[in-house]
Length: 170
Image: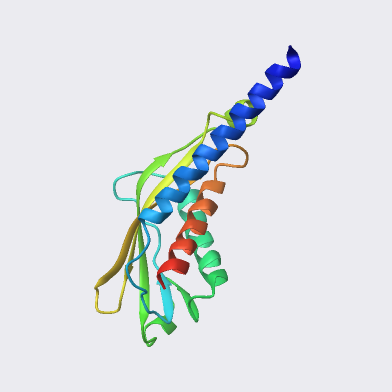
């Protein structure tokens, strides 16, 4: 009797994982760009939070993870920080502007105990703008940590998703 309950629980868990994966793939297909965007370098502006207040450590973690992940993507010859003087003379410079539109501060303790509650999520509106001020691409991207990991892991998840958008679009 106990064995059949374990198998039923395992089957239910596997089904939930497969269903969640199909939603993620469907979401990614809907956001495929129509054409490739050109840009030789990117300037990352600091994370703004007009509508939603988030802790400073989340803003800084988003910024640092974005820089690291966009450097790793290899799509840009240079990745500039805000205020970098070298960006001014760069041809085909793209500027990444971010604005936090949603934030849910979860609980690491709840995730460790239950693994189903206490998730952390951060939704940020990203605009990729060329030198003349034309918006080349806009997306709302959400970073989450659901099961294991610290709350700041949501910022890493967000940055990885931005890098995926860059891989597809540039």
